[in-house]
Length: 70
Image 1 (cartoon, rainbow, N blue to C red):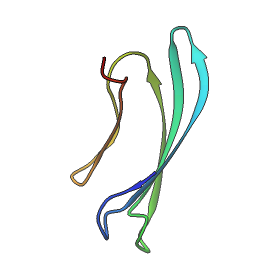
Image 2: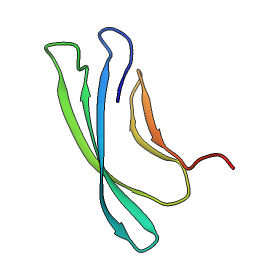
Image 3: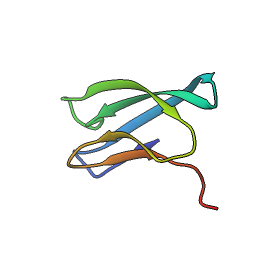
C-alpha cells in the first residue's frame, strides 16, 4: 500500500506471521518518506484480534488495522 502527499509518502507492506491463540500476528514494514533520498525503514509485529490496533503513527500519518464494521 502506498499513501501520503509528496515528500511524506509511506510504502507499507504486511504479511501474516502466525496464529497465537485467538489472535493473528502480522508483520508490518513501513518505508517513509518513500519518495525522498532520506527514506528509512521500520518494521514491527502486531497482535490482532477484534479491536483497532495502531501500527504506525507520526505527525503525518496513522496506519491502523481494525475489524470490519458490523
